[in-house]
Image (tube, rainbow, N blue to C red; front, side, top):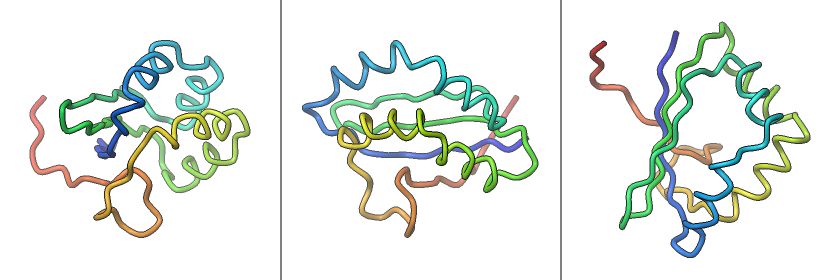
Length: 109
C-alpha cells in the first residue's frame, strides 16, 4: 500500500459549487476510483488560502497503468471537465502534473 498526498488551488468563485458537486460525486466516477485500486480517498479544503489537499491509499501494483486507465475513462473525463476549470494548479508543480505531488515526511498508525 502506498499513501499519496497532493495539493491544488481552488478558484474562490467556485468554492460553493465544488463543495456541492463533491457532496454527490457520480457513482461511476467513484466506481472507477475503486477499480483503479484507490482507497480512503479524501479531499480537504483550506480556506482562506483556497487550497485543496487530497489523500488516498493506493493498493495496486502499477500506479501508472491504473492512472492511465482512469484518465481514459470517458465518464471520468466528463467529471474532470467540470472540476478542472474550478481548480488553480500550483505554479511550482512538476511538468505534467495537475495536482502537485507531496512528499510524505511522517506517518503514524
